[in-house]
Amino acid sequence: MLNFVICDDDIRMVTKLSAIIEKVLLTYDYDARIVFKTNDYNKLIDYISSNSVNVVFLDIEFSGCKENGLDIAHKIRNLNKNCYLIFVTSHFEYIANAYKLKTFDYIFKSSIDIENISSTLKRLFDDVYDSDTKFLKIDNKNK
Image (tube, rainbow, N blue to C red; front, side, top):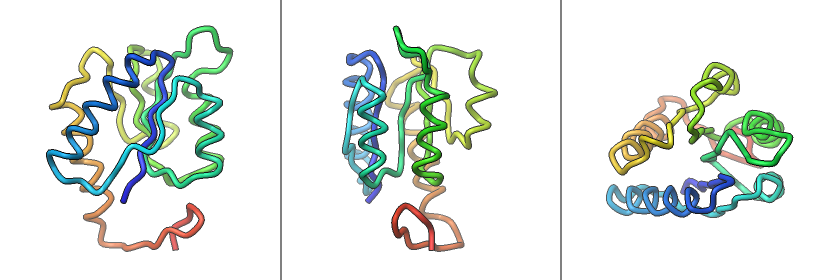
């Protein structure tokens, strides 16, 4: 079972993305669930620091904040080096820096729909379960 989290400063985007992801998970019977949703990146970091998380859907621009999603992703990587990072944003200009953080996908908010999310999740589940090398996760580390 994969645990997903969603963080965007716009709660409407959190709700929209959550509904689409849940529909895709149900439609394709993927073994995953959304375990945490927030519009506060500090709560996201707190959650990840004490819970098992496999996939993070993260915005880049947080209005009124000094830090952006790339800064938050660095913190996430310090807590969990193996989770899948998927940026969901309206900002093209961060794409090169985002991939330096081992980003799995970079989705533009203008193209969020069931087809695009389905495509991303299909690739993600193929990557997780079609690997020849098998790992057992213990304390967020592959063994």
